[in-house]
Image (tube, rainbow, N blue to C red; front, top):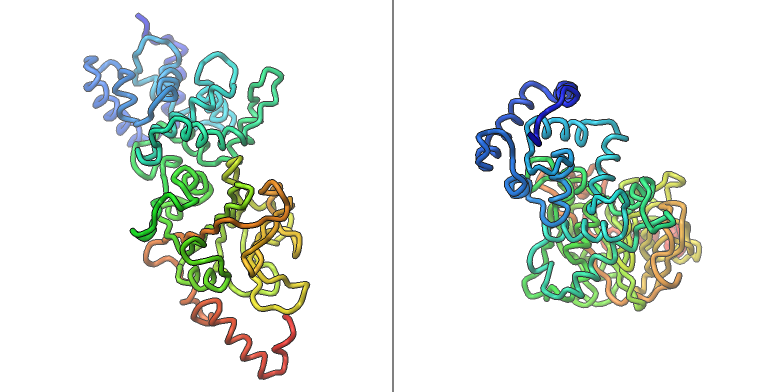
Length: 420
């Protein structure tokens, strides 16, 4: 029979079983029995259709996953031994074993070469699996453009325009949501499954969603670099089309948030990019922040750029300084006047240069940018998460209010006109 198990397979099954506890094996056996019953196979195997419905993966990637888990026998029968061996390799194996499994998984065509068409199939399956009907839209051209930004960040170093294992690893670092998705396909199909989570975008009902830069696919992309809690719900704090291009208004609006923020910019060249700030935007005369912050690009290439550890030049927030050495505005990485990303206090200009802080390139077509739209979203953390205003020794109030208090204190000592 096509699904007959060889002695070698039995040995692999015995070895794979050791990767799970007794309770985990019993749970997997119960799951198999349930799915096999739905497959009407007298408890012998799971059919491809039942497998795909349970795990909730759509498109060509679903078929490829079934092929790999059933170990490419092409008999349409996934046995209990197949499930245990595949899960042990895919979820509990060494890093090399997991990487090899994911590389084979990405070879959707099964031809041994990982090309651009394979990535297109993967992204199409992701879109069909996790995005809402509104986000998918009905316009195929729009759908293709949405996929294009993720494809543009991929490298095909092989002479035949194929990806090497290193190319795939690099792409997954730039697009961590893809790696999370590809690495969790056999996990229980619940909302918290890594890579399946699309942050809920909370904005006023009178705001037309079409004016928002941050679309579902972009939020999913950025959320891949965050924890599950941080990727649950984001609230619109500031939008330049609604609140005006004002630095003071920006600071006032974002001070109402209790968690980290996501700054998104679309410039006059049509490029979209920004940064995740893990710390509140507060007046400082030097860089501050921690290694949780990162820069990102959304178009024309979707990429995440995390801190390299080369330096601690993470966040910048200059407010009301008179010294040229302390530029007023907000930024990330690099050094003053040569940031990885910077918006001037006038909000009418800024710049983006390559920087070692995040190993990031210039995020736009030009180094000196003119913002078209600026958005800022607040990460909504559950009640009980640390609140900046509740920290001992921290002055309460908005950034501007704290700045006024600073100025008053400086006046008392005759330093109000000097910089820090």
